Length: 80
Image 1 (tube, one colour):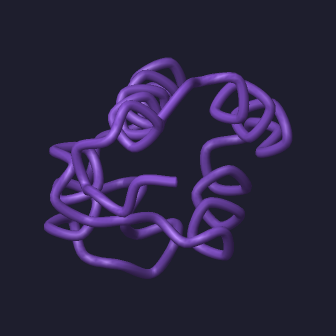
Image 2: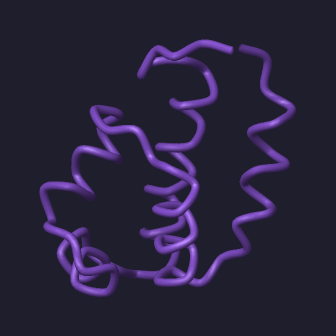
Image 3: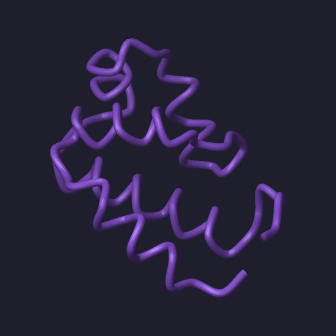
């Protein structure tokens, strides 16, 4: 498994999170407020400059309103 920030899975995750945030009609600042982070942290995730832990993914999923199992299944199928 690749530990690179720019791996195919990491890139797919950041794109998914950005799309889900947009679908929920939340700004980065609004999402950050919901999870108790800074807007800069959300921006770093969406740019691919920050890894997302499983616990962070759960917080984001709850705040946006998507099933985190779906994204994990999707990411699992991507070849590293």
